[in-house]
Length: 224
View 1 (cartoon, one colour):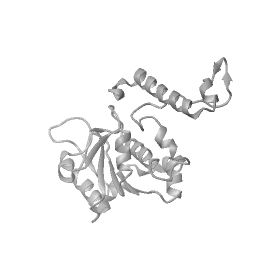
View 2 (tube, helix red, strand yellow; view 1 turned 180 degrees about the vertical axis):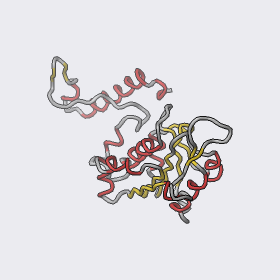
View 3 (cartoon, rainbow, N blue to C red; view 1 turned 60 degrees about the vertical axis):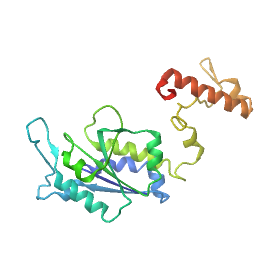
View 4 (spheres, rainbow, N blue to C red; view 1 turned 90 degrees about the vertical axis):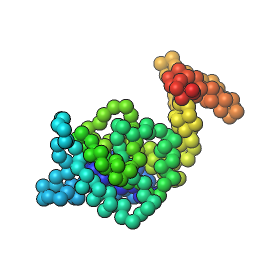
């Protein structure tokens, strides 16, 4: 997979891409991440990519020309590239969407900043809009990292044990069951006996029941 990220602050991705699963996936050649500075596509030497909104209002908007130029320059003739705009107005990002995107060959993530995008960017480029939550971030770079992390860890070979992705929260529409490790008892809190029994059938049953119980208590909307 190839992931291109177009934004104003590509340098913030350095630490993120250099650690944990994103780093491992790159080292294994499972994914290539290309960071693109939107200012490289500005029309002036100052690298201007934003301006005040028509009609007045606070803040600055990302302009059409540099964004169109950046997307077209990065995508080229690749008709299979999927353009995604990170926006609080987009569809909620879910594990199902992460799994869908993990099946693509190439993603182009458009990370906004300031007061958002000129509406003609939506109209002319027709990106898929994705929101990582019902809140506003200072920029789309953080949202792009969320999408990259959720998608890359689903690529075959990215995780040490492929079963990890299958049993995590949301993978089957439920929250993950409680898990324990050593010691068996800590400050009066004990590991459930069923997990020490060695009976894999009973353990699987217990885990399923606990997943449902926890989901019902914390995220009843998932059950519905």
